[in-house]
Length: 298
Image (cartoon, rainbow, N blue to C red; front, side, top):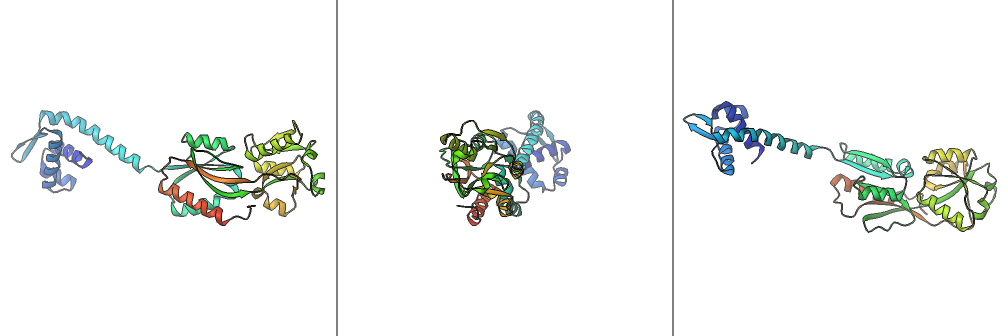
């Protein structure tokens, strides 16, 4: 049973004339007859009585007519679902959204101009993984010192240099290298909790005896940078977010005796996810972009 057979039956139930039905639907009369015959064979009962050139609905045909209207509506609605555009949901931290992903998006948009996409903030790596496992994200970007999840497919993209930063007016800017313990009187400007490099640095502070530091939290890296420039405090950020500020001496990278561990950015998605064509293209474009743009890699 298909929509063409149902449309033929419903039109014939109105005209009660096969010749008129063929004109309405632009089919040959033999095609109209064949559609109705196949439908009757599938149902197992006659829909029409043939009275010479005229046809009339049987009692069962009249009963089926009401169901056919409902069936045709449902079948057409089901087809519309297939035509609906897929929304590709991507989660990433602000640093990736601002400094890297736009180039990938531009290339992908040229290949798939009609695909809808939604970029959603992902302030922590735990948040990215949870949203992927809950189907709230299709693809995620994670910056962390290690990603080891049996539930995710992970592509390592690039190593990220994490820098300790201050204003050129800060006294720390005059030192070639400092101890972590030298920071105990500083104010720290951090992104939200669960950020991988914030967690790393706070653990390092505690290990070096700096407990309960003075912290101001921000939701925006750009806000942090502006406040550091005004010497409100110091921060830790990926190098890719401060390249221009370092070049212009608006921010100064502070060297520490104890080196920071290496963070990496990964592209991840659910291990059991079958990527659609445009999703696979986005993944391939992202991998290609990161592999060929490693100016910020260690």
